[in-house]
Image (cartoon, rainbow, N blue to C red; front, side, top):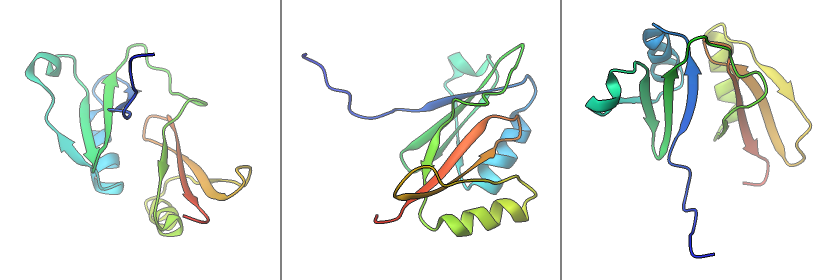
Length: 124
């Protein structure tokens, strides 16, 4: 092979039409992402982009919209217990999962019902 995959550039998550403000509240106010300006040629499609360090999430509008119940992004977190409490304090669900050896993790959902995984490796 003559190519190399360097990194994941971004993750795209679908959301229903008109949901940009809900996405801003969740990703900026609750998770601490910063909004990233979309290129003018793509802004006409709706949706909104966010970044946290080198992690980018693109929220794309999809009609008809169906939330992703199995497929999901997984975020490696430092101080997972603090995030869990923060989500609970913001009335978000947390589903514990103990099936990944060597990791503490849980699942939650974005405002649109898309599954999200948050994990912290025990020996990291």
